[in-house]
Image (cartoon, rainbow, N blue to C red; front, side, top):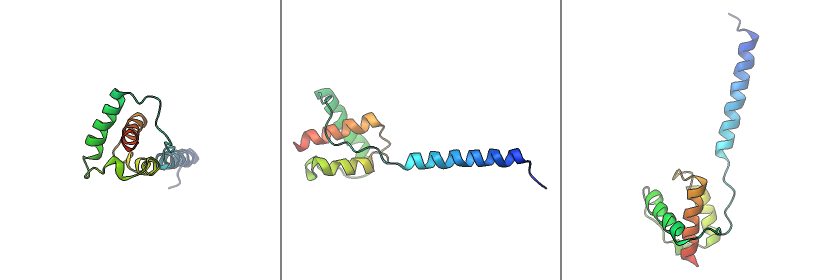
Length: 102
């Protein structure tokens, strides 16, 4: 049985959308290179809480001083998606870690 031509087009469009969605979800977030200007005591406390709860949920927490601020960029970019941190949470955790390493 031959499929209608519209079915093939629709299948192709959905396949392209799925591939684009997959590739977009696999891209890394832009590297955070320095702390933001929102490093208030409240935000740092939120970052510590997120670090303790989100990161500590899966493994023992490393000391923030065990790596340089630059090293933490790569670590955070790799681990934030696994911890299901959104961009704001990612930044809060990074800001907390950098504040401790200084």
